[in-house]
Structures are given as C-alpha cells and as structure tokens.
Amino acid sequence: MKPHLERIKSINPERIQWCCDEQGITPLELAGIIKIAQSTFTGMMTGKVGITFKQLSKIANYFNRGVLFFLEQGPVNAAHVYTPQFRTIANQKSNLSAKVKSIIERVERQREAYLSLQEDLGGAKIFKLDPPELPRNNPKLAASIIREWLELKELNDFDSYRADVESKGILVFRSNGYKGAWQIPKDDPIIGFSLYHQICPVIVVKKQFALSRQTFTLMHELGHLLLHLSSRIDDEDDLYNVQEGHEQEANAFAGSLLVPDEFLSQIYDQDRPEDVAVYNSWLKDERKAWGVSSEVILRRLLDAGRLDQEDYKAYRRWRADQTQYAVNKGYRLHRYGEPRHLFGNTFVSTILDSLSANKISLNKASSYLDNLKIKDLHKLEGFYANL
Image (tube, rainbow, N blue to C red; front, side, top):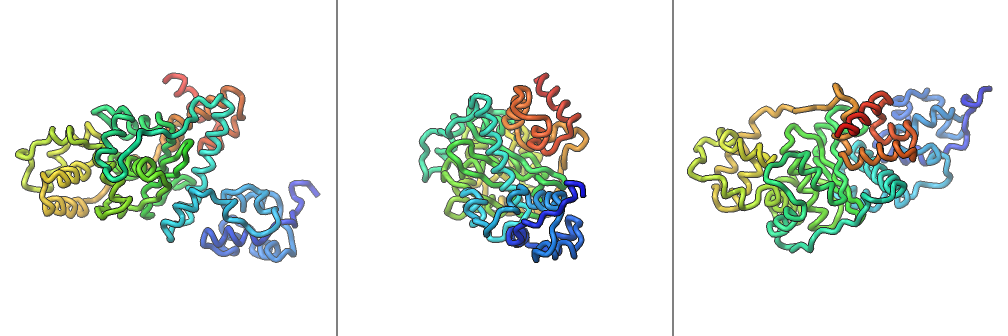
C-alpha cells in the first residue's frame, strides 16, 4: 500500500468533537462539508477505522488547526488553545459566530508570524506601544493628545489614517469583501475588534460599504487600546452608544480625533440646510477632506450644542431609509494587491523582506499572504519594488 494511503488510527475523536462544538456543527455535518463518507467518519469517531493523512488534513484545514492537534491525546485545554486576548473578547459577546472566532484566531497567528519574522530581520519594527499619558475620564482631551502623537494631517482617508496608526507599532487588518477565510459576513453584526498587547497590538476592521465607516471603526478600536488598555470586540450598536461606559468613551474619542474643534470651526451654522436630506451635500467637502461620514460631523456638532437633537435624529432616520450600496467588494481583478488591503503595508513588507532575505520560502510567504498564487506574489514584489 502506498504510504499516502495508509490509514491513521491514533486520531483523538474528542478533539474533533470539541472543534465541532466550537463551530456549532455535528460530526456528520463536518463529514458532509469536507466530503468524507459518513461511514468512514463514524468509524473514525468510534475508533474502529482510521482515515488517510489527506482526510485528516481536510479536518485540520477546516478548523484552522495543525494536524498534530488531532493526534495529541487527552482533552483540549482551552487556555492553551486560545490566547488571553481571544478569551477576553469571546466573553464579551456570547453569540460570536464561528466565522468571527476563526478570524480572531487567524489574526493572532498572523501577529505571531509577524513578530517571529521581524526578530529574524533584526526587530526594527518591533517596539512597545508607548503613547503619551492620557486622561482616562476625558476622551476629547485624549483625542487631541493622540492626534498630535500620530502627527495627523488635515487631509486624510482610510489609508493615511491606517499608515499613521501602523507607524506606532499597531498592526491594522481589514476583512475581505468577498467570501473566504478573511471575510466577516455582511449579515454579521460585528464591525471590528482590537487585541491588546504591549508589543504589537492589532486592530481589525470589517470591510463596509463606505471607507468613512471603516475609518471610524479604526479609531474607535484605537480608543479601546489607548484609553482602556484592553481587547474589545464591537458590533453596530456599540458604535452608536451614547451611554456612559467604555463604548461611549471610545466613540467620543474617535469623533474628536477625526473631527477636532478646529475642524468644526470651518463649518458655518448659517449654511446648514433645513432639509436633512441635503446634509450630505452640505458637508461634502468636509467629508472628503477629513475622510469621515456626515454622521461623525453631525454627532460632533450635536455634542458641541450646535445641532438640535431632533435634527440629528431626523437625519439618522433619513439615512436609514436610503439604500446602502457596497463599494469595492474585493480586489479579485488585481489579486496581487489584496494582501495590502487585508494586512496593511507593515505586515506585507515584512513578509516580502523575509522572502528576499531567504528567511522563508515562496510557499510560506504565500500562506502568510492569503494563499496568494506564486505569479501574483511576484507581481506584489514588483509593486513594492517600485514604491
């Protein structure tokens, strides 16, 4: 019998069952998903028959784990499997989907890979998160301090904000807009999360229909990292929270960071139209220059006492009635560029530098870059060579 067809009988079925429970599926549902005959799968789970290495690899890949995980004896120790950061945010939302949990784990693994490769390259981009001391009970003042720390310019968009945040040792990832390992489904309420580490914390932003919404999510998560020194996961409701607590503080921080008082002084109340349906046109230039939504500007005007609560609510009702069109669902026409949008320039350049220095193979580089095909990987190398 050929070696690759030999059947492995030392598989720990308890670990497969544990993974199924975490994903909310049954073992027989798993067998159907990965296309293993149910009789074979049942025999394996009861210890009567073995499965091939290829079949075991399918199980491992589906659960985003190594093959050895299912060969280890004994029950799963969740404290060893999940990082403290994962457990922290998983406990905040009891109904996290299996897909989101999987992405959190993937992010932690990408972070570990980044740190390891940076150490091999000399560690120049590894440094402790060291922001200025911030007033914990004054998000607006904290935002002013951090705006100076980030050296933000007046004209910005998501990419420039991302670059400034990454310059302080924070990785910024963004989910994909198409189906795949890195997509947060459109109907999933989660819009972002942050993983707090003193060395190389990570912010993850869900790809949404407007870049301005992604920008606010980015700064909201930055608020959690800098103000609360903790890992957080947020859904849509959290980004509209006006009650006291960490979410309100992160929202106030993000709003003041993106639209400081000196920006508000450029808006004249006498120019504000009576019809809330025209607010987007009224604020068009400001939205473009600052990379924010009308919602963020109006919220700041409301907090400054320059906009009535009823007008603000009327605008939100009007906006909720509008059809939201997704923009830029993915980058499949330029596959080689997707890793930059997913993982940011800091992460991607580290992978390419490691490849150039012969620290990793082409296949390993591909695995870190969303399984990019080799021809696309070479295109990505060419893009960075011309930057």
